[in-house]
Image 1 (cartoon, rainbow, N blue to C red):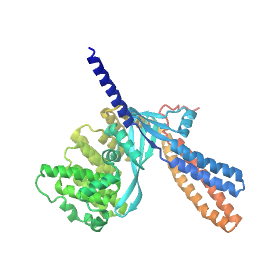
Image 2: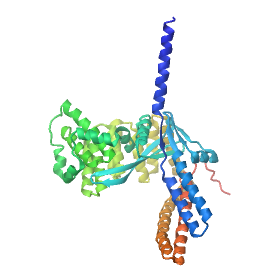
Image 3: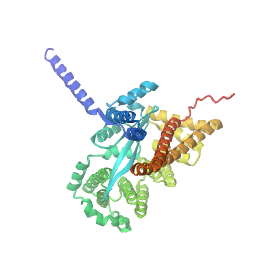
Image 4: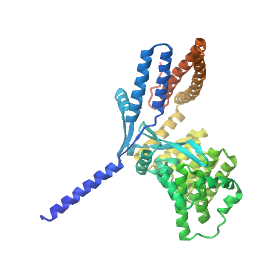
Amino acid sequence: MSNIAPTKTVDVSNAETLASTSISEQTVSIRVSPNGYSTALFLATFFSAFLVYLEYDRAAASLFAGSWLFLPLALWSDRIIFDGNRLTRRGFLPRFWNWLNNSRSRLKITDIEQVETTALRALKRGGNVFYRYRTSVQGKGLRFAFASGGEDYRRMIHNLFSALPENALDNRSIELRDYLKEPKETLMKAQFAKIPPVDVLESSVNEFQTNDKLARTKSKSGQPGTEEIEKADYLHRLANELRLSGYLLQALETFRRALVLNPKNAWLLFDFARCLYSYSGAEHNDKMEKKALAALRLAEKRAGRDGNLLARLGESYFQYGDWRRAQKAFRKSVEETEENFRSERGLAEISLREGKIAHVIHHFSTANRLAETPALRRWTRNESEYFSRLNSDDDYMELEISRVGMLETLENSKKTALKIAFVGFPAIIFGVTVFDDLIANIGWAISSVALLIWVGLIVSQSMLSTRIPLDIDEEVD
């Protein structure tokens, strides 16, 4: 007995050590998107200059120093932390805001309903297009947003997305989960695979626009061997890693080599088409865009009974604006697999675009039945109830139509106000430079009033962004 007890104690101790190590590895943090802080800093700087112009030097110095000291510090402390179980937002301003309106700052991973990632072309250099990704995580009325910019984002994506069901992620989020790697590591792998550098590939990029180039990827007849399939799979993964890192030309060449080895692989064709579409958008090349859509249709043809691929194809068609093909792919996915959450959700989105509210309700109700997590069931149930209320209550529909119309008006007005504010800047600079008080006064008046209106529109837009509650009392005297 004396020999057994110490052994058990050691095992428990090792287990606790491993558990604590696992938790520490899972805990990652990332700064929130700096857009709001940048806007506040811009406004504070502008109005500091305005106060200097009005000769309120002390107020101007206080505003300028306070904003440039406090806002960067607040941004530095404002982080989103994921500990493996929940997302938490911490920082000076978030804590103050949560205390002010008695709101929550934590979201359990089991409560996450939707994850959406958008890509913005931040820099284009030759055949390379460097993207900035912005991810939004939503659930139970909370929303967390963070943007790419380093290792923190990659760790957050890997840890968070790997713990979520795939149906909670959109197309791009799934790709980031599977293929987002450190760019230098990806380039090294491309070098080992003997993929030519960008300057070599730029001279042959036009070949991807010809039918001959695409035909050569399909020219291999017969069934590929095991070695060829394994090599094609490796090149497939490498091509996606290059694509998400922004090395589009090298990604296209890697996809081409993989397709030569395994030309009938529908998933390979699907990812190749998305890469080709990204490159066509960066180059504004309509001919290459048509080739990308042709490759998508070829992938659809070879998808067979793969309902997951058909659903992902439908989402891509929908993203590219081809609703008819998207609807066809979604319906084919439902027919082949009978039960597919992503396809039912996609059909609901298309029905909404077509104004078929009854179909929207039907598809969300079906998606609710197929949802595998409580969060997805809650989200689809809420959507179904919302559109059911719209369909059955004319007064509620009028209120919602007015709200949505007001949001569109506010968005257009916001853009107009910002443009007017920038129009006043040259007048300010010119008036101050030539000591013409009249021109400077006109410039300051235009810009300051326009910026104040712009801020008011932003606040109004945030207040109207929430749907009118379903249980609102509509009785009027």
